Image 1 (cartoon, helix red, strand yellow):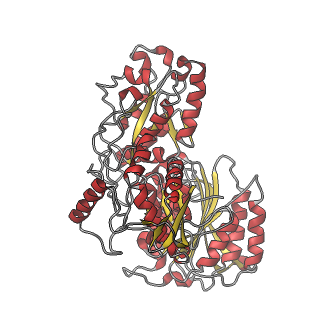
Image 2 (tube, rainbow, N blue to C red; image 1 turned 135 degrees about the horizontal axis):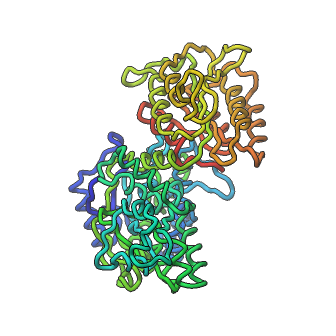
Image 3 (cartoon, one colour; image 1 turned 90 degrees about the horizontal axis):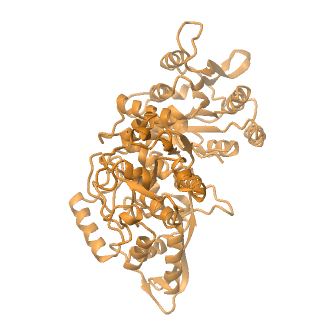
Length: 603
């Protein structure tokens, strides 16, 4: 992921898929769009009267929702139309991480309060990357991804502290500095400020924090080659070991800082030394006129931008196909949002435009740079975000999970590459198990049918801490890896319902209140041979979901085209989470890692 010039339009595709535009042509088109303030190939008309109405719902990152709502009011007043038909949009705030997960559903789980969107505006294209790891979500996402506004990821520091390390002229700071400085108990003392205490680094959860995710991607891949080496993973571990607080989002950090600042500047300086933020967060905080304002530090190796792409979902999403006029409305509003008026609205809120140019108010007096550099890192490797979240979760999140694999006869079916489904699933499971830290709690079962006592499942490695020494003298982790490698699939049944009910109760019995408790089950088939039916299973899952003390969601993974995707989705939804789908070797690796370590929805 070498640094590159910012682009308004990027592709998330892994290869193949729909026809692509040549890079030189795309660059030319982008330049024309920026200069002209329009979106190529689509113009809406303002009419005094029009008939009917085509409507689109825009699910937008909360930080830009108020801007889009204001723009929508002005746009609606102009009575826009396309081909004589009235068009309109509505905007709702939607967490980027949650939307990335929901897009992977078989169909939108639509309720009265959660309507299906025609457009997604995540805070960053990185959320698009995470969503595109799902083979269900990927075709629903467009090739064209025009940016509405950008804001760089920075390290936010109180102004006095930033000045102490040389701001604004002589700051020698990179992402690695975060962990190094936090590890030095005398950092501020050595700079003549013992009253500030130790270097207090606060981090935010990359599962839902855009700034946290983008910062961790830069920390995890310092050399920008698209892969996380052992040395870089060690850097993540050092960051985890030396962070002061681990909070949900940037707003949690600034809220605590604001409360301390209300008391005194000294109190603010003893609250936090540094934290990942978006440049626009710094601007917003400083507009409250705090005693100790923030300063944006721009790491010398560059950072990723929150680029707010405007994603008009394709008709591969069933709800979009049911509302064809929504695409017309979505395109029409995009033209307005990227007009001069739209650009001015984003600049006024502290964002930069698609070329990283901001308003005159972006200056050192307000804690930020007038011109930012180096150029933003480009997310060129599709797996970068997934790798980062996987590695970080593996070293930070206490886990208590039972992994369950289908070993029915259909897993012997040969797929692309002359491997069987079982071969591919084994490779994915071995890779996933290797990511867990030694203090994680993991167990391993298989299921098909015909086991002792008439059971449909068989415990292979009991749930427990992976670093434990087992009776054979090996660690639980090694026993699990050995068991996966030796798996065969002789079974003729697929006792899905009985297995899920028993696996969930096994985790309940071994529940860890300080951990993420869940079952992750892979299957390529439909239930055959269970003693309970789907209704009975759903009753049991509903009862557990209502148990506030021991809730255990069941993440199901449909593998291959024979799996009963609709039923698996019902099962996972009933348990409080989602079902995922994988179709080939690449997908099963990514999907399993996402289920175990990613941002799987739990509702």
